[in-house]
Length: 123
Length: 388
Image (cartoon, one colour):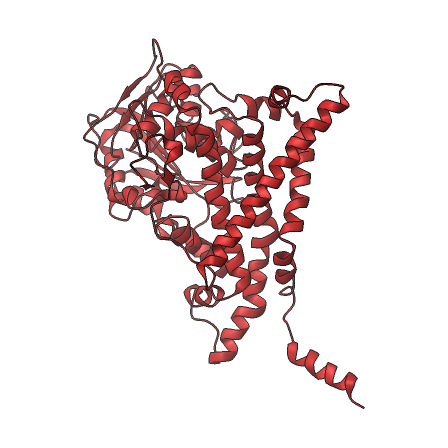
């Protein structure tokens, strides 16, 4: 499905997947916010790769004009190092999701915790 | 082994090129998908088993009746909602990251698709009607699906699909050539029918020819045909094949009713295509495969491994996610289908179904690799095959 069909070039159009619009959270705004946070994380990651290219060019005593950055081809070890960095970034950004999920590793017993708190505080 | 750099820079001449930031963005999407699978999705079964199912059981004094009841409760859980949102977002970002890179170089790609002195051919049908089961949903949430056309001689959807498929499979399906399924089909052929050297081959639902090119490579003297529904997809596929030196005859056709003569092919195959069809189309496609095959010709259908009956509750909920949120309307239907029976019902003999080990190179006389049990996703592919 292509919205805004009046616009000419493909990049000027809004491409939307035909099919039902999903809503996962109680408010679609939360879905939108998560999409935006994830997109921002991508932008940080892209910047980080660019910074890495600058540093590697500088380490090699080379200039880092835009054409030099564009011409830099990362080899396999550089790709692997960047992938590790991305995993770290993803863990930091989505930490709260992982931690909330970790609470389901064992069945929760909130009643027992409440009882214990009461016992501890009992005179 | 080719270096990662070589594959990323120019895996084949039609593959859209990436600039510094585009490859950074696409690798982010690939790593994001890995992260979601390993570190967010992996917790969902525990959420289900340790919280959601016990809560249902307590509330009604009996365990949940089926996965649909559990799914309803899971969808109310914030941790499930977060996973689902992130999963959908990653898929949308994948298409967006590839489409923006394709669109800025579309003119150059179209120019490159103007192949001089081709070995194969491209036949498009301006009156082609896309089947309703493809037309109604943009499959895998790929905007424009397999068939959108934006300009004359368009290759956009093919270019987007090719580059994104490599990211989607995250290197587990033959890197940027994405051809392990094609090699696996031939591996199956060599194992079941070692004496057969097909002279005429047909790939139904070829997309950009990932498997077609691999299969054609084993039979350089064969006449290889491939069909699909999208004009831009097929033009890209044809140019891609020509640029890697393989001549294939691509045509825009519906696999339910093609224009090929009766008794024409020695081998007809499909590669992860049947799950994009429908219960109505499936027997028609099976019958059409038989019609176009010569007596003694073979049909090989490769599909995703894992039958619905073998899935646990989380596996079924995960499958439903594909149906509803990744636009795979036939997912449950296809995974529940007895493909062996469907092939036999179409009149094929000597029908077998099982799991072929995924391979990057088919070898004649290799150790048996067609098994009763799947080794898992990307390790095995389901295959149903038979003889006319």
